[in-house]
Image 1 (tube, rainbow, N blue to C red):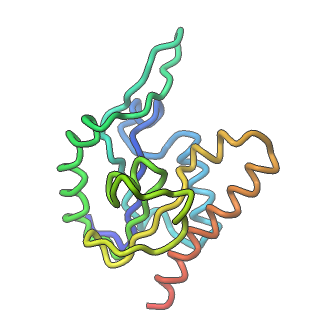
Image 2 (cartoon, rainbow, N blue to C red):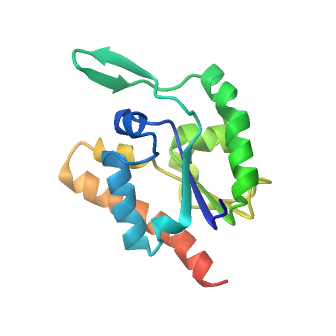
Length: 165
């Protein structure tokens, strides 16, 4: 599949693991809303994750997300590079620190360079922003609203870039 925009997250969540599709749970719904607000059609994007399996800890009947480690990221990295090579995106969007550091280097900080286009051999345009799940975990409604607005603004830079072409 070819797509102008490729979005890369951390790893599948519980809903994604069960459905076999990326970003279909609560974070995926928030991503869908943000893409619509930014003017990007998700149907015309390619969405994937750095790590291809759901790492979790069982807690009662629930499976709680557990951050992937460096060995898991390294083991899955060849598949991610193959996806990027096959998709040939014009814009690569890293969603969250795990994706950004896997693709842009361990020194990359989303908190510092969020929403900025950065040079990379992976695609003509590369941008990192927060992972939608971080917005869902915000401490209060005001913070959630502010973070969502910034997330849409970050994605809007991509929409603006595509529209200018």
